Structures are given as C-alpha cells and as structure tokens.
Image 1 (cartoon, rainbow, N blue to C red):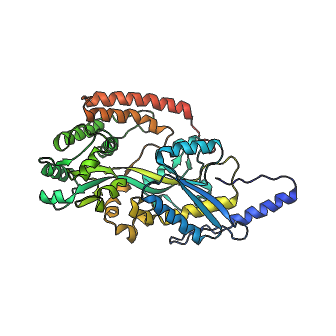
Image 2: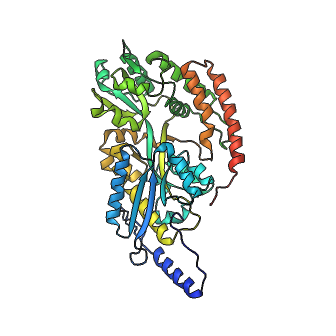
Image 3: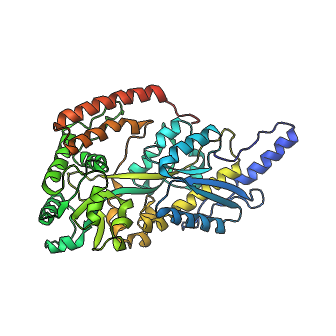
Length: 445
C-alpha cells in the first residue's frame, strides 16, 4: 500500500522464491493489539526490522506537540519501526499533498480532514485501507456511526477516524452569575433566556459574526430542524428548504436580540476575551484561547445548546489514511502502517487535553477523557456530527452557501428564501461540474 516501494523482481525463480519467503514472514507479524493501548502490532523483528515511516499532519495547535509525544512513545516502544512526523500548516497542506503526489513522495501515513477524504480518494492521493482493516480490528460500533461512514468512498474504506473537533459553546461564567444564572444552557429556552439576561449596556449576551463560523452554525441548526444540505444522491442542494429558512431566521433573530450587527470574523472571540460577551459559539480549538489563564474572568466551555428538535452538532474530523505510491509498498511497510495507526487511535485519549475529542469510543469514554469536563459535555454531541457528504469536490459546492449566509448576516441581502434559493441553484451547477470532473470511480481503488 503506501510509501516505501517494493521492486517486483523476476530475474529468476530463486529470487522470486526468496522474496515470497521474506514477504510471507513479514505478513505473519502479530497485528492484533492487546485490548489496551500499547498498539503492539509490531512487524516480525527478524525480517521486518528497521522499517522507516513518514507521517504528515496539520496539527499546528496545542495538539501538535501532543501528537509528537505519541510518536516519540511509539518509536521508543517499537524497536523495529521508526516514524518521522512532519507538521504542515493547514493552509499549505492540500498543496503539499498534491505536490508530493505528483513527485511520488507522499508520506506513509497522513491525517486527512472529513471534507477531503472523497476528493483525495478520487484524485489518487490516498488509497483504500481495506487490506489492513482485519489487522486493525476496528468496527463501526467503535466510533460514531456518521464518523465511520465518512471514511467510506465508493465501497472502500480510506481512513480510520481519529478525532472530532465540534462546534463548542464558550461562556463567561462571571457574567452568568451576575445575571442570576447558575448553570450553562442546554436547551433553546434556556439559551434565549440566558442571552437576554446578560444583554445590557455594553455587554452582549451572544455575539455572532457575519463570517466564520456562521456557515457551521447554520448547518448545525439546519440538521436540528430536520433538514440537510443535499438530497440523498448529492445531486441537488436542499439547504433552501423550510428547515434552512428557519435556521437562518433563528440566527438573524439572535443577532438582532443579543449581538452587535455585522461583526467581522473573530470579532466574537475578541469581544468575548474582552469580557463584553456572555456566550459565543466557535470551534473547540478556541478553548485554550478563551478559557483558563487566557482570560481575566471565569471562561468556561461546554456543548452548544440544542436549539431544534433533532440532535446534531457541526464538527470537523481528522482521519488516519495511507497515501498512494506508484510502486506498491512492501508487506513490512503495510504492517508497520497498521501498527502505527492502531497505536495512535488506541492512545488518542492523550489528545483530549489538547482540544481533540477522540473518535474512538474506548478512548472517548475512558476515565481519563471523561474526567475532563468539556470532553464529558461533548461526548454525547459528537455522536451526531454534521459532516459533508463523502463525495469528491464537495467543499466547492458549499461556497455559495457560505456567501449566502454571510450576505444575510451582514445585511447586504434581506430575503432569506430568495438568497438561499439562488445559492442552492449555484451549488447544483457546481455539483454537476464535479461529477463530470471526477467521474464515478476513485483512482487506485
């Protein structure tokens, strides 16, 4: 599968027999795990020694050093495999993968985000991991069902879910206490009451921008109101449904009632840090920026309240994948890939303190993770994550939606139905173009 190349030798029957013997020995290495977190699926030490793996990710936040610690621990505990990790800026990550694919220098293992799994598969950047799944030993019930299905493309599995980064509520507990509020809101009624109680003078109960993350907030509300971004075949955008209109109406009402108008990106975070906002909704990656010692008040975090009748939480997800190489990697490297992936997933509880919600249920519901209040609050939320359909080019189809929501929230457009209709029509054209561009079969499947 990925990475290091294996030459196909046919010089003589003797050499062929020798290579078959070596690969057979490699393939008999134990890849079973031990039910704990050692990830002990190591290659046969005699015939698969000194396997070198490269590992890429875009973990440029606090989770980056935490991941490096896991890699170091893996290297220490596995004498026959050594992994070199590279952290690449998220803005450059896709380009870096494209360039590496063109030069056949892709890494052995890479984290790919939920909206890029299908696109990467159809472009031939990553390859199916079906052959190592028996060695990994994971099944659907080990992960949130929607997270598990996200990594399936055209009947093949391309990744193992590692972590989920959900939309999160951050609140100023001091402002809540001053308003007579003792607990953070979990329902629509509690949220509106709390936001109203904290909105007075220069303090805004809930700050919402006209840019990021308003699209993510809309998608979460859309699903909570029973809607979806696309039809079942992902051939038509459906966010202009009554559920979509209701979601955007709720956002505009919240903006007019509790927030400053026309806020640019990050203005919600800045207002919160200044102590002028009671509540904001943003990505979990803001946790270290707006809670604890980062602020001069009691900043706390919890799951976003459920506004609509159906549970749904927008989230990003990172999955461990094996990029494609023009020359198939040896069985030893494939075994090493499985060993490393299993180790990282089995030990993903160690990432929770740094803002990554483990996707693996054993890690998520471990005492270590459940002892972290934010993780305990988010555990039920990530069981119903809102992800894009796993089809190639899907990120392009969301561009008209983001523009439409921004126009409504900034006031440049006022008719919600017409604005959503126009954006859905534009998305339909993009979906059609993508079907023509990518076809129906991933490369290297």
